[in-house]
Amino acid sequence: MGKVASGMSMSLDGFVTGPHDSREKPLGEGGEVLHHWLGVTATAADEAVIQEMADGVGAILMGRRSYDFCVGDGGWGDGGPAGQTPCFVLTHNPPAESPAVFTFVTDGIESAVAQAKAVAGDKTVGVHGATAAQQALAVGLLDELHVSLVPVLLGGGVRLFDLLGSGPVTLNRDRVVEAGSGVTHLRYQIVR
Image 1 (cartoon, rainbow, N blue to C red):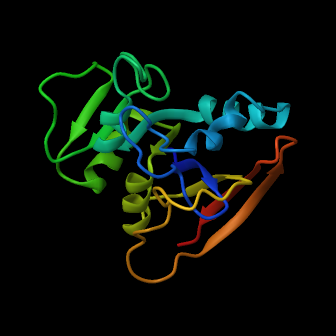
Image 2 (cartoon, one colour):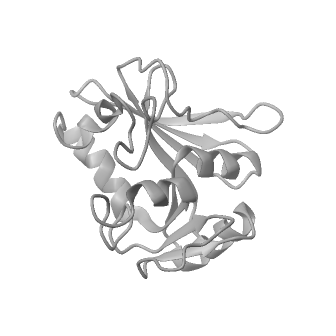
Image 3 (tube, rainbow, N blue to C red):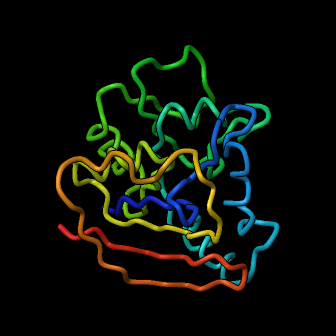
């Protein structure tokens, strides 16, 4: 089976969105700068990092908040964050209707990871969103953490590392890519 990996753009002060994120502003106020390396300021090194992630993903795991902010018109359309790659959404209350790419999981993170891994096979389960990543990390189901560190201080928003559970988490850094865009792409293996 493949691994479970979270990949997020993060400000130097630890935020993955700016303040007041919403359906209208999924990255919050000022948070769009976190994704400039995906387009506006992208270098060949940035493009190689995102292409590697896209090529390796077999399923996506996300929280309901990410789904609500980005599904449909004005967001991902009828797909998910990686087009038609199957997406598993952690939720207590599934919507009545949704695009076919989404499966709603109501019995917790362990079940969601197991279902996503079964679909992904030898490919990676990409964890989308801070809360889903924190939940997977807290129960020992996250294998890799990719952080694209953006040289900006947002001062508020959603933090990537708010709810880690008990005890420290030891990481082994195995890659650093310094892109000309100013972004530093870091990859860590979770030490168990």
